Length: 102
Image 1 (cartoon, helix red, strand yellow):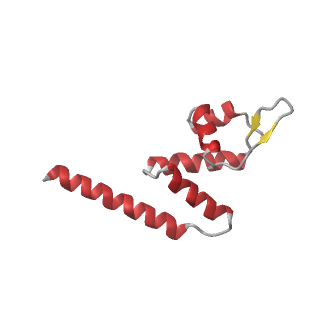
Image 2 (tube, rainbow, N blue to C red):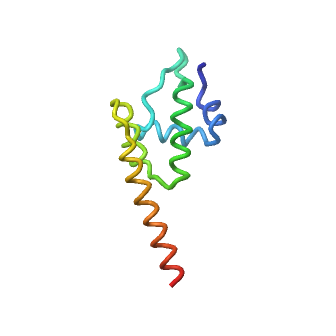
């Protein structure tokens, strides 16, 4: 199914501007366009957008998310990369909590 940028944004709960930024930063593969020049997003693109949203919720940066997506696109299972990034985030949060507690 084809989605406009507005419909894609609504489906994942972000702004159309956020999607455009993520596309410009290379997190999304270039999307197709209608004859009128509107972006068209597939169901697979929607899943990638959901992954980006979940990753941001976990505290990953856009470059970290892009790296994970690039590994996946190349056919490499990014499990080790994801685990390393999440472990680093966990350590950062633990340090922050300890510094606030002290």
